[in-house]
Length: 299
Image (cartoon, rainbow, N blue to C red; front, side, top):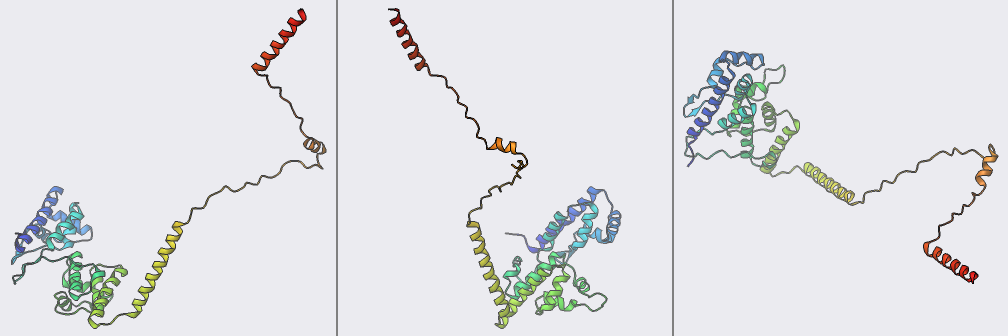
């Protein structure tokens, strides 16, 4: 049997707090010195907030988890590992709060954006995006969504709270403002969120974006032709790289300028005969015939 949600939440929160405390003790800094360092880094955190990050305070049955900006500033000021701090904080912040009902099922991971086709999946993805962004408060998200030189926000916190609780549907423009407020600056990534909303709306109303369907079909055809052309190119034999002929200028003198040289060039070269050494068998035969002739002459 696993732990109850309240016990698991307290365990993970205590692990984060102890890690932060040991990090500060290893650096030899006081709370005041850590606060001064965060101010110099442009991430000004008060001493009381940093001190509370080292403690495990229970709010009802749920421990109080410091926000990610506080943990990040604390870790950087003490020279700690940001990756480890992020892992511990995510583990502590992702533990679901104990419900008033009997349901204690663990939260399932969010689907990838390309597989979202139901409103509940989109809501779950939005909640996970907010968690990855450091779990900012509704007021902070409201302030982030204010246009420049304007006091009117694009994400009223009352509406945002109702959307994130699932009691109010999310509009397309509202989703785009929420994603940007959570730190998503890549417009291609924002467009993937909006495409997920479009699929949900098309499934709800029973309509299909025919223009998008035609464009996707054309892209698939182009991809098929590109693959076929690439396969054809790969099967072709590799060309031979033959050396190119080198043209050497003719520096020989002309016949008109040097007639004597022309005669020497046109005259055929003499043939030199090379006398070959007779073989041993031939020399033995000649010696024997000479010996016979000498004996015959003596008699």
